Length: 118
Ligand SMILES: [Zn+2]
Image 1 (cartoon, rainbow, N blue to C red):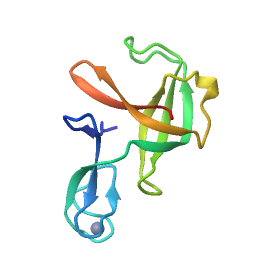
Image 2: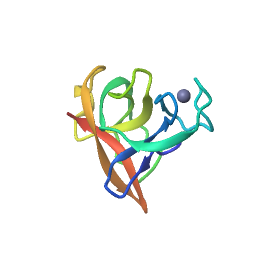
Image 3: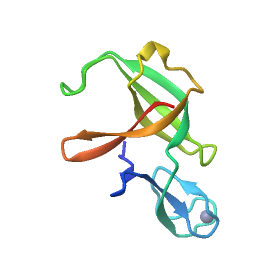
Image 4: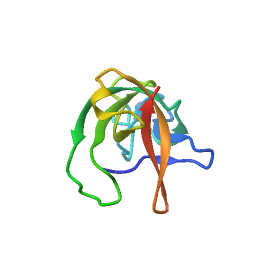
């Protein structure tokens, strides 16, 4: 799983086709629709939970369990989805279709985009 990029203004960045303006994630070399070049642009950070699972296994000691692994669909485009964590919300309150917005967690020297209830 690649971590989406974050710019200096703490905005989530997603690649977008320069020609047809389609958002493309995960990252690709070219636009899958028109083969146009891609450039990173900030997105609103708004989205909804597309699907999720609650993880009870401590894969990483630094991350307490249980936590929510989710696929969030960004508001910018149907099918623009990323794997992420839902934070600041009890796992049993997370629901498919729940509105969320991006937040950022410092993990080591990386700023990782996660989502919280909107
Ligand atoms: Zn395109």
